[in-house]
Length: 201
Image (tube, rainbow, N blue to C red; front, side):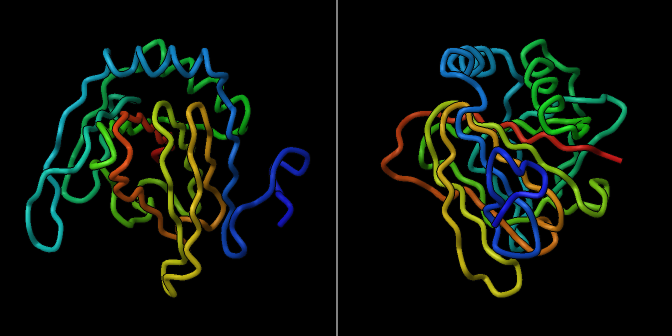
C-alpha cells in the first residue's frame, strides 16, 4: 500500500485502518553506536511494578521517562514524572521532528537487557495522547522482532524487524485498530534500547 505521508520513501506496512512506516537506517551505524553507549550509561533506568490480570508484577524491562517535567505520564497503574531532556535525547528528538513534521513532548525509554525482556500486547491509546496519536519508535542495539495485529480479530499478525538505528512511525488510526508487542527472543543475548516519542495534550 502506497504511503500517504512519505510517498517517495516507503510504504504503509498496515493493510487497513492505520499507518505504519519503517525507516531501517534512519541513524547511521556510527551515530547509533554512539547513542546506544551514551543512553545506556546516562539515563535514569529503573524497573517499575505494573498491574497485570489483577496482580502487581515487575515489568520485564527497565524504563525511564523524559520530556516536559510539568506533564506526568501514566500507564498500567504507573505514574511517571519525566526528567528534563538530555543532550542525546534532544538531538534524537530534533532529528525525528524535522523528518516527520510531528511534534513530541515526551519520550518513554525502554531498556531490554536481553531476549528475556519483553513487552506484551497493548495499544498506545491513553486519552492524554489524543484521538489519533503519532508514535515514533527508535531502536538502538540488538535487532528484535516487533509484532502487530488487529485489535479485534487478532489476525493477521505482522512481524517487523527493528534494527540498530531504525525508526518506526505509527500514525493515523493505528492505535485504535491495531495492537503491538515485543515478544521474548531466547536466542538474543544483547541489549536493546527503544525510545518511543509521543505528544501529551
